[in-house]
Length: 345
Image (cartoon, rainbow, N blue to C red; front, side):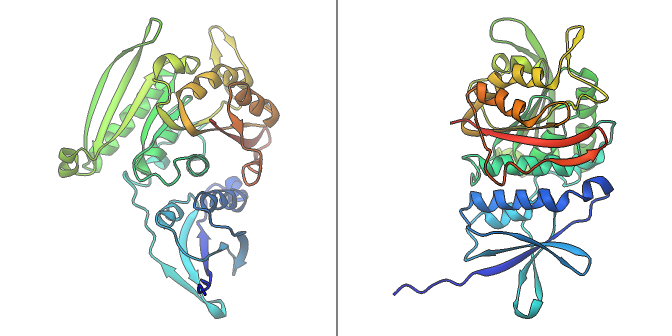
């Protein structure tokens, strides 16, 4: 008779967040992210949030720790400490396996008006990867943000050891992201090469590009253990003309909230819904089969049902079952942030 393996109980201390408004939503979003990660490794358990003293912990059971899962849990956007929960209420701290490729603070340091919370971006990226067919991949993925602004999503992807592509029409924002990354790489004495050029679009025309290739050391650079970032100054509605079909594993973007700014189309102003509709077909084209597109938005200016409809019209399958239908949370008076994930069949 096969001996039954008893489950171990684990506890994750959630890190305090400096943004008081976001702090109220951390437990909710952290639970979604944790469930997504556990689902990706086929761990059947129902995490719970409990307060120990005045600190929030997420508790979950696992009969074993599959290879790769501990690294994914260590990279959880809200993880401050991982512990084994022993009998008698004792917690045994365990060493995390973060394995960040670039400094963990890279997405956090650059501050600007309208910036998406970097922890939220990391959470959404982790959820998208977990929901994709590439969750357990041991090789770097390619992450695209078609509305990248100053490249917070790209910096999160690089920290996790993935390659990144950022597209935006705001040349000033791209220049600031370029300058910031170059300065950060120099300060941290990381090997890198930067180049600027022009890329011809399928069907005519061209876009300006900036490319970074980086490594953690000279030896790794020689061995080809590098990561790349491409910043493209172009229209997200032309993704299919900029990139090869099936070239991205995951797409993550934060759509304009339509409060202080809105996406531009020529001289007019389009709605976030119109922007997503224009991007959706290109997103579906450049995604690999089994890849996932994740977009966050202001539910007051773009209802979730309309965001989902735009992605479904492009042939993507919206993930409506738990935990992926519980992202909605209050940000400020004019913003209730939500997110929708959709997989390419």
